[in-house]
Length: 369
Image 1 (tube, rainbow, N blue to C red):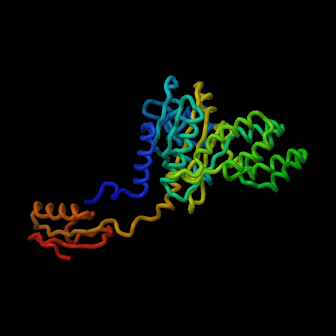
Image 2 (cartoon, one colour):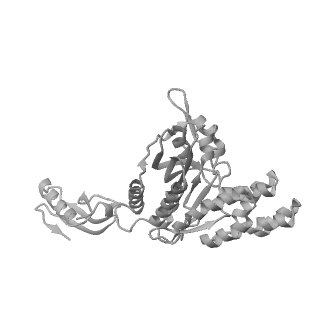
């Protein structure tokens, strides 16, 4: 028999597998509208990757938008009186990198809202690593912490106008440009040395944590290292992607405030997963609780899944128009029951479908190869 799972394409199989992982860990599916009120995004545009949003006027006069973000919708509707653990499969609409056209981007991810303790962070990071492993066993989850780098900037009293530039250079591991930029601003050699040390803080947990401890010069940095130390439990676990620390990993400072994630799959040019702790978003909505989550960008996996198979079906069955429908039905059922996928059409009908084999069935029900 042809199994249900076998007829799904690779992306559909992945989604089904991830749903099982998330639901077994206590997450339920979250459903939302394709549209949201436009003002939700304009009032929170600092949390968006782009301020460009597709908007339109509804029949009742309200200004609506095709949603460019999932998390804001979930946070807006969150009931903080009870913990929420949800996953979603949704499309968002954002400009492409060149800001010339809008793209429809399919995401699958999860959000945990409520009390976020050490285990909640470990579990979320574990689910991110399991997600990547489900995509490919040749994958990598990098874990960083916004508190480490922001704590370092505060302790070193880095000028505000320099912070965004340094974020970019540190995330690019561009030590030469970090040094050159700091010299332009007449920062001390000791400050430059500390900033240039950050890009090298990447690798196995124990090695990175030991190096990072020697660089800690504030309580915020120490707290960040303590939180990251608890995630060592994920290192070298079966059925998880490779997990490593990277303290040069930078997220949106307006959005994230703690542990952050970035996921990669060998063979793909950019990150396919991102996320982290985002209590700052909850505060903006006056909700006094924590939140953590991540998103998998399904569009980025198209190169991995490759093109469609050369054939659409196993068999193309051409039938004589005078054949009895009962006879035709029985023959089709026999082929399907044997595990074949079958495309049935009248003889002489033009189709562009491709099949591994093509057979005909006569008026009397005889199969002709």
